[in-house]
Length: 166
Image (tube, rainbow, N blue to C red; front, side, top):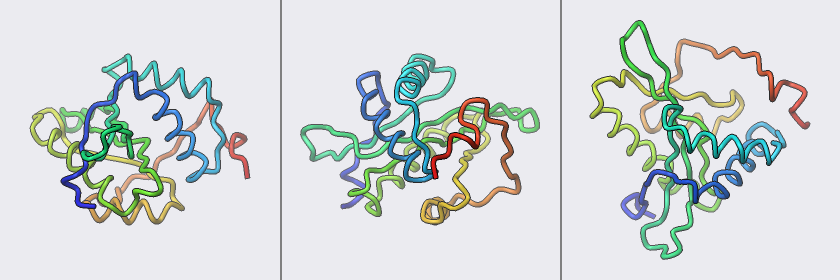
């Protein structure tokens, strides 16, 4: 599949069910976490209704008349006082397993990168990835992203270590 056949569009409320399912599957696959679906649904709706938080995009196959999403990417914002600009953070990346390795993430990333380069306030793009997810790290490096000098630390009040189902 060539990336030209992949269409990228902003997600809408109508995509809520798909985004819930993609996030559920991603959390289980990458971190072995079983997310609380009502909380996840509420969180996605709140995000989609609050453009100041960021945005989701979805990927679809242009020849698919059903317009069923095959991938998603969430973008949030971080102000950098050092740069007087905004980093766009890529999060919640998911590509349907049967579509992986076919340019879906690359198409979504190119879409975001092109938009970022036209906005003079955007100073860069960042993402975080689960440290054991080597296949995702390889994909990210292939599109030009590089490991950061920073390590992320957190104190998660909702999905702390006890939420991981091993």
